[in-house]
Length: 223
Image (tube, rainbow, N blue to C red):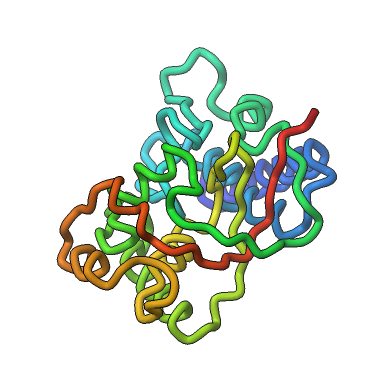
């Protein structure tokens, strides 16, 4: 198969996948649908159908346990290009999303344990992760947007008990929670200094972080 034939096959496959996704989730708000499809479903399909791919995750690693919901490997007995398998593993399955984003006032402790562990391991964006495409640049961009008041893009979360589970918007969420330069909200200055120095902070220290407003699409569990 030459490159042109291969490319046309891939285009056909992903157009079909998008149609299946739209059919599977007809009620998702347009923004939520596009963001989750591009960063979750399409990315997963590309990763699973190309064993030699060096493509990096767009936001956070989607393999293994936790909230990612994508744990397939190339050795699984179910075909790697099974759309139903990918849809069935989606962490936003069985959730209803608001039609419009709302403002939530949150601190790190308002997110579930898996999110907290990711926040802390990545030092809220101050520790670049080489598995994530342009991680450092994206964190810097979001911090600049926060400081200039131009960070208007919503995040996507689902309700997990009395906590939020973050699906999309990791860079802008971490930058918002820190809120460097605004002493009235976000992280205390002394902890921001530690983060900038690449030093970890304890989970207990998050108790003194002040809540920040973040625009979010919220998914609630279906009854």
